Image (cartoon, rainbow, N blue to C red):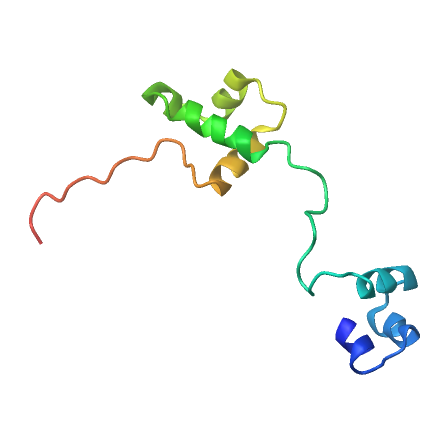
Amino acid sequence: MRQLYGFAKMPIKRLIMRYNLRKSTITKILNYDAPERTRVQRTGRPSLLTDTQVDEIIKYTSESWDNRCLNYTQLHAELKLECSVKTLETRLKQRGYFRCVACQKPYLTAA
């Protein structure tokens, strides 16, 4: 859109018809000072679990075998978190943590 307006000299009225957007949205995009696909900051609702909270949860679960074997519902209840169990599970998986993963068993015979 910015290229059509800047290089092709397409007027704002034609951009409105082409993209089916309001004039305020198009002018906001045209006045945006960052490159095409980047944003200054994240938009939308803030995350219920921050990265530092997730790091502390991972540290807590890594302390002992009993903590590692807790399922997400038990972990949520034990830590008294404000988010849902599904949010806790999603955020831990985003950070690369997967509860208690079994070690690979050695092969019985040499291949």
